[in-house]
Length: 264
Image 1 (cartoon, rainbow, N blue to C red):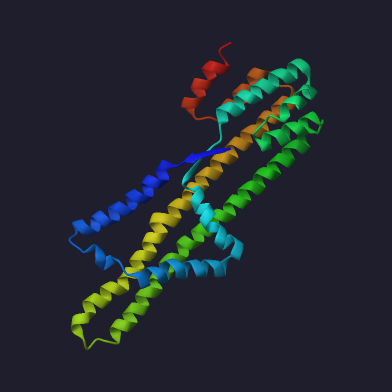
Image 2: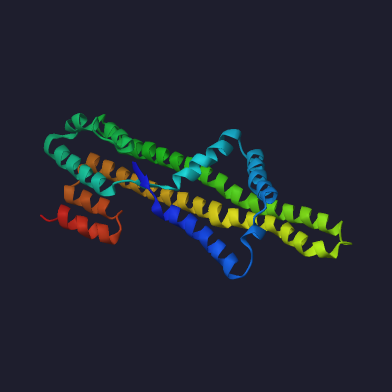
């Protein structure tokens, strides 16, 4: 699996922040009235330490690498995998399953390599499916754990924002004799709620959703590989194999590849 820069994530983050700034300015407010370092530290750093309390230290530290993944676009090369599978199918039907052994070392996809290695070793189809589906489910469990950590941060940030607001209101109520300070103090108290909502809704929840999309895409590719490996083992007609694998592609890509693969 290769990766490239995900411009959608970068544009999304910058665009969302820009819309917040533009909305503040258009409404006639001062941008500086929304900037308060102590409030930001309370919400961002405080919610992170709360996250560390709720999870393991390793997971809390690893959340930043998980967030970094949202700015990368994984390239699963489904079309290349299908073409490779068809090539293996043709060779296996022509020369036998053992003939695939020489081809395995050049495979970049480790999941497909493991599956085909089991085929070459003569492993039963039920065992192959169980082993590959186990690896798939464990992959999704690992992905789910990382997504849950980000979702937890999204849940904690607004709570810390509300805590900051309560702290600000307490301070404001203690100085009610100074009526001129009530408005500014109230505004400052609400800034922490603003930060909590922004961290949760502009960053954490979209990032978690993006990782969920990546997980679904990778799981789909691996399910396709499982079907391909088992089809090769059972000696399916290459055309049948192609139709099985093409079913995993979106309609546009499928139509293009059908013309190339099923032209005969």
